[in-house]
Image (tube, rainbow, N blue to C red; front, side, top):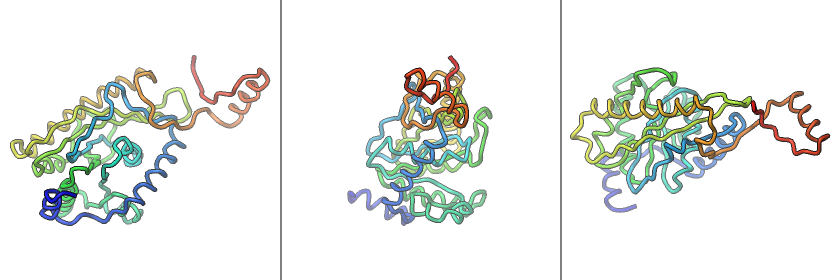
Amino acid sequence: MTAAVQSRRAAAGPLPPRWPWLFRLFRRYARRYVARHFHAVRVSKAGPSPKLGREPAIMVLNHPSWWDPLLCYVLSERWPGRTDWGVIDTVGLRQYRFLSRAGQFGIEPDSTRGAVQFLRTATAILADPAATLWLTAQGRFADVRERPVRLRSGVGHLATRLDRGVIVPVALEYPFWDQRTPEALVRFGEPLAIAGGRPRSAQEWTALVAAELELTMDALAAEARSRDESRFDVILRGRAGVGGVYDGWRRLVAGLRGRRFDPAHRTD
């Protein structure tokens, strides 16, 4: 850690406790858990993972599902060597206390104290140029078709506190295509550079990020409706097939015909 990074971190305040080994362990668990419940995790070829340099990054996601934080753990593997953090409601953190050592820090939503706590902690985290902060900035579960996309103002206030970094819109959807299990679709938007956030107000930053996230969500929605796997790269392969008697019969027929059994359920 350079002297400049140490100086910025000291000025921002103490970091939450984080055990790297526990983060890595929980990420492996998240990969296995997601693979058991989804057909695949797919990243849009038209909106691929952006390159992150030696600058802090804020990933701003829409929030369609309970699955979103687990997808963040899976996606974090796209950038090895970075230090990833997430935000969780303090009520949820009390239920899953180990997450406070696995890269999550708790805040009290809908309160002034919680907003101050979030800004203080997030600023301390992003003093590290290798830090990535994952935010479901809608602050609640929201349908992917809900328009306009509205974000909590915290992301805008945070941008005004940084003198460098990037904000990356990240769109998520979980449609059912041809399999019993759903697809997890991801599209990254165009990164927004922070070059001294203060020339824009917090309200302007929030509106800008919301607009870019909405554009990214619209683009992903069009790809989801196409049901075209070729428009995506698979970063995690999960379960295929229907299971039960149906797959048992198909396996038997494949064996009798001397063919390899493919559990994928296809419509063609």
